[in-house]
Image 1 (cartoon, rainbow, N blue to C red):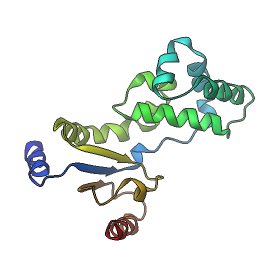
Image 2 (tube, rainbow, N blue to C red; image 1 turned 135 degrees about the vertical axis):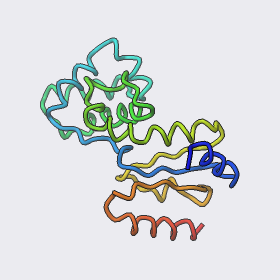
Image 3 (cartoon, rainbow, N blue to C red; image 1 turned 90 degrees about the vertical axis):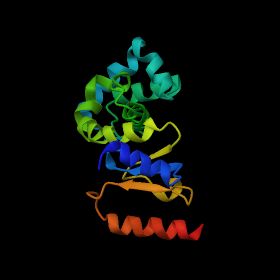
Length: 172
């Protein structure tokens, strides 16, 4: 089935909200090998605007820098900054949010696989897209106003997750 027919079918059924469930939307786990690249990014004045756009306050950046310098790699401040940067990066693989290419290396191929579907769905201009990672509680984001769900069935236990989703939607 070609892309235009899919888009026509989505529009024709009156769908307004679509959920995409895929582990590509999950931030990669921060690990010690990423420390130098993240530290460089957080300290670089040229990255200040990207940090701000990602929602990272100066206070959070400074706290993460202190934790990185102290080799406290399990710090919540580091994880928070890393996750916020990834959330901004994953929306179109925008490299200005990618500290030293870490995200491209770890998740670029997964996100690239989703690009044709995302491009198709955003082309309509009227659909609300909800992106949900594997580690997120999708029952909070997917309600009865969600008309279509695209799920990555390579995730562990999709039958159980979709069963939970169906039960949640019936309760509303």
